[in-house]
Amino acid sequence: MIYGDLHFFDILVFAGIAAFLIYRLRNVLGKRGGFEKQNNKTKKESGPSLLNKKEIPQLKENETKLSIAYDHLESFDHKLFLEGAKYAFETIINAFNKGDKKTLKNLLTEEVFISFENAIKDNSNNPNYQFYSLVIDGVEDVFLEKELISIKLKITSEQFKDNDESTVSKKQDIWTFQKKLKDKSPIWLLSAT
Image (cartoon, rainbow, N blue to C red; front, side, top):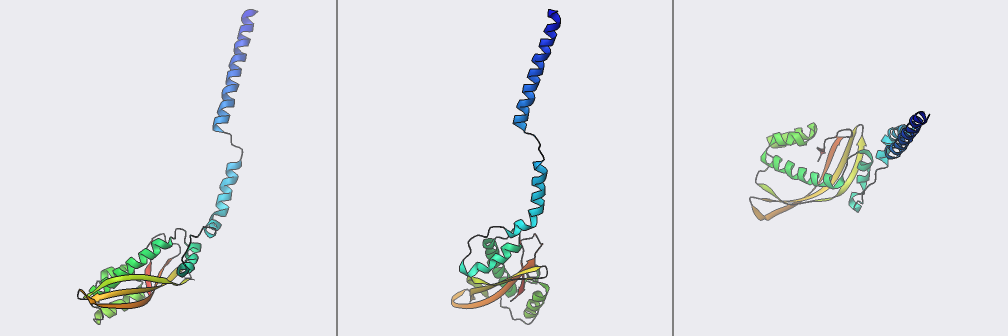
């Protein structure tokens, strides 16, 4: 009888250890209670509206219209855009002055490229001009058309001729850059000057 009670006692001890291990594993690993499915569902349902609730950083007074771009473009960063616009402006003007149509073709919409190409054919460009300074004065407008977003910038540039800084001339331009709303590429094309 003692031998049979010993087996029963061993079974109780092992059952106790198993219960303890299950209890500890459940505490450490957690349990699935159905909340995860609901949470994933909530994320999917709120996906598009998350874009509209994106926090807009502090914009300068002459940049406030860029909030429209933040509302419609998932990865928009106004500082990167404005730096890119300055770089594009300088690249486009230098390519135009040199008659570099290959560079222009990648940075301009088709209509603007045709007008730049015609100006180069008419010798309206001057390869002797160089940049002295470039400032974006402000954002004139941001607008949506069909599947495109466009940003119109007021730009002041100073250029000089033949390496002579005494020939510095100041010019103000209004340039419009555009891209498709769903395009993940960071490249904006010049669509109007």
